[in-house]
Image (tube, rainbow, N blue to C red; front, side, top):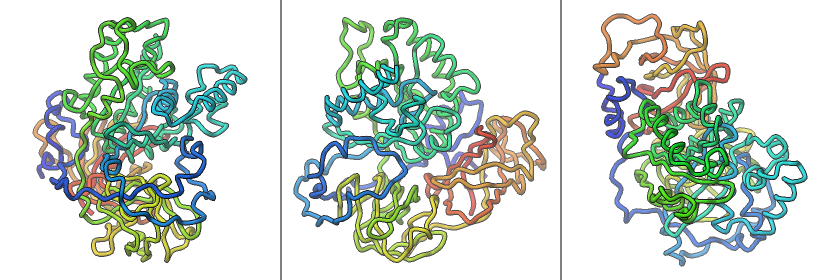
Length: 511
């Protein structure tokens, strides 16, 4: 079995620096004719509501609100220029307190999504809590628990636009207790912004063993975040004061680790210095009087320049369901991984095989006739009750439904087992694959892969240690929807976690 066929060419560039370790990555997408780009419809009259409702970051867990009580008519496509903008999902990842929520909040403020009055209100609220520097984070951290603790718990969601791109920001929690929520955010993303604190001691804490900087990078790669912007934040801190030496030190330590995690640093990673709190080098380039040595782009320019592979809008429809609620019928939320959906389509909710009809499709707050791959949607369905749908189910085309399994064959790379643990038949862990979280057990080790030749070893394998690559059979408690990695990478890559720690990453090779 030649495992290199499943790995993108960019992965191969860094394989030599990787000691032969194989980490799942995207396969090359099919060429898609740009003329087939998905039509989008002009914003509906729902946009006439109070604009403040839209600018507030929305938590990933949807709550039924009155905003869709009346279904607005879908208007004819007119604003074609606006609708030609591409759409990217950007996840903010990194160690706790690196400044992810603050940077996300500042981006929304600079792009005009939040007005000055709202900022003043948050400033006062933060001051009352004796946390003056947290006020920008309040834009993304909307619930009281997050504001009191200063820690993101849910994946915050918000939107902003540049001249060429519509962005959805996914603000992932950095604390190790909330890694499952971080996985949920990163699994929806096309691009990652890894936020690193330049403050003395803070970078070291996040980067050392057990710090979330390392785990987030490995998870992002496994979850299909192929492009990474590494922003070195808090450059204005008195312990740093925009020093090039500190920036270079962080960059030199991160590059070998990024390579080891499977990133091609030359093609897919970019470093830049910022201050999220005061907004330096975000929307406009940093002034030479502040940082004389930086002549690269600002964050907005870097995000606009990111190129991600186009997905085929004509493929079989796949949308893993993240959440559901009742609102004039059953509404499901998720990101379209493959294919397109239109009002009136008949689809299947897998694995239960419930046949449903698409009543309405919403991108953000706007009702549209049709939506394509990469879009975050709310879809109103008829033919199924809300209680019959669970997170992890997949909305799928009728003609080519997603496979459902309780056992599959996978290639796993062992990262770091818990103390005294042996990876062998009978090993139990928690499986995270697209929006599924499920208990699983390794029922058989089939063969070990030689890290040098990438070919299977001949001798029978009974157990493996850290760093090993092994092909095994995995069994889950309940029926789940998965795809072979070579066919649908987004539904074929997964992580195994045990006791709050990521122990292995893998890809489905047979269903």
